[in-house]
Length: 497
Image (cartoon, rainbow, N blue to C red; front, side):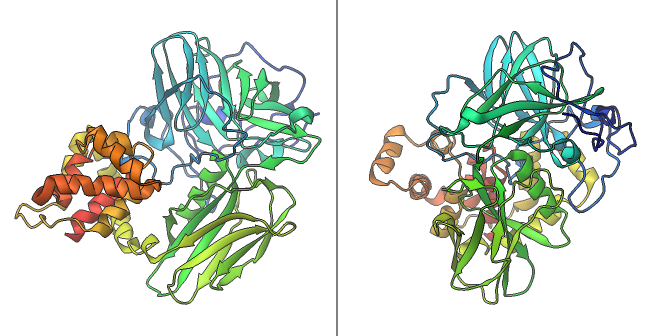
């Protein structure tokens, strides 16, 4: 099978400048195992273009790739959404989990010291290496290559650009976004591989419930594709954004997506480059029922809201440049429930309750966003400083020296912070807040709700600190926590006191 349509961007586009250029259109080679001894020097950064505007000339890779971002610059709209699928979580993992550094333009850097199999905690990629090596990689958009992915092939997971010494990298396992269950007998995976000579589909070594394993031939954009004789079941995610304006009404965008980092990153870029301002609403995104192409789904609001469209036919939109969404509009700012229902079975696929506290701080977030984007030069200067210096500098800008910021934190503030703390809250409690393991165990034994446990952990810290339990003191304790959302909340505390 071959395809005459040209690829949207050939591998040569990534040398030096990332500016769009006209290149010969390579054909898609699907002949057998198309491994080659060629070590492509393909280098690409994160996609610069948005869904709503053309790509603009970018700096060369050498100008940005080695600049490490301070902790506060981690993307608060992280693409990584863990699956809750019982089948896919049943596998026993023996890989060493490693956390990469985040460089500029969304590129990760992973340094490993010796032979082994390592799994990235941010992207789910699994690298098998035969020695000490530095690996740089980032998530790309599939939409550039939409002309080359033709039926019966379909996107199977995120698309990545990986750069390192290919002699040191034995294999890569790509996370896929499908639920195989017991239906994978008639399913075939391959790896879509773009090289300077063209795009090809290469054979895989194996696949599991969560990953597709590929023997490294050369390095450039690579990602899993799938061909199936049966219905394909997707892990789904529902992602919410609220429009920020001065109207009392509520307006939301609801995206129904495959749990695929490339797709979710495209959504984030689309919202970012919209003519309106949006904030992300933090609700559990993972669908509790698998999504199927061609199935129809209805979004329901309680109480009733204006929903456009009221129903959609699900299609994996990874290859589409423009991402579809559902608009939800309420004239008055009231609490409400959203439910995504499969129309054939009337089963609830996803649900969430939206409360006023989910969006009350949007004015604060908007102000922080404006100050953080006031100028590229200021951002570049701060990103070149060590993390602690950047943090201290920002805290001095927010804090005052007249001793006013000594007000004790309220339960509402602590609860808002508890909602933003991630799965490493136990480590934070012990390492940052100096609580004893016995105190943490006592909280966990009495409370099953994780958010309430986090809140009680913060209350325990407050009780021990007494008059010192101020916003400034808490900021100092948590300044090394790697979460943009946590740092935003902490800065909000300082502004409120």
